[in-house]
Length: 326
Image (cartoon, rainbow, N blue to C red; front, side):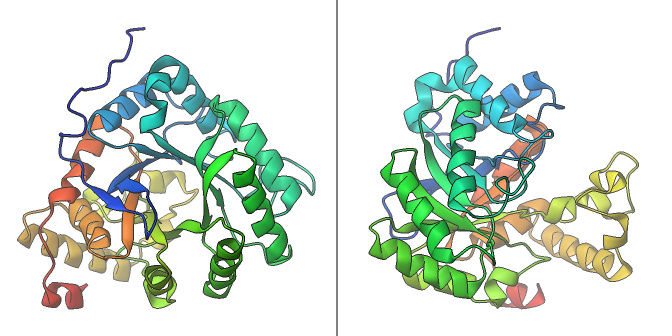
């Protein structure tokens, strides 16, 4: 295997960085998610090619979770292999995150938000990724049954142990977000970032006040599923391709593509064409147009797809009438 040598011009290749809330952390406007395409069922050579291309373009943030794959844990194992093969010399240039909160192993201690689960999971994740620490560790989802103080104190202690440098939360409701901000600040481990689903088909973080709260409190925001699992691309404008993610029906199901949804996608595609952009470029740039948004997380099945998505960084501004039409 040929030794990887990062592009010497990787920070001059067009990537733009944005401050994460009021922290010292700068994140690339486009970050690489390992949810799909980096599992044990995927071709390692392609994963290596994609991550090399991303880093050479200034994408320094890789986002993972304990159960990304499939199978569970295998995306982190891929990252561990990539560290040994390619990225160990560049560890201090990378911002690596992982999460725990969804089902990972059988029994009562392999899910949700207990101290037992979060700390055990991170210990396992570090072994799989062959890392001494992660830059960012998330509570992957809100646990309505575990006391918030237990979950939050576990996050505080994870940082104090040196296993993570920063803390984030994902998909917590507004009332719990407010508790987390206050608790973590009082325990000298301020919340760095909130990860939520924000796209042109799902504006919940805007409508529920999550983004406003993050903005007021100096918390970063990063969007996952910015292309709505592929709906906000040209993939489904003329029906459902036989080889599409929708035909596999796990996260994106055929019944989601209703007549109303298809009409909305086509309307947005016409707007993108008037901007001389693809629908995906416009969808990503719309998210980044919000001042409180730090970065968007994109997946990639090829370097060509990632190359197209990177164009959103230089997309033009939105006028008020465009935003109203969205």
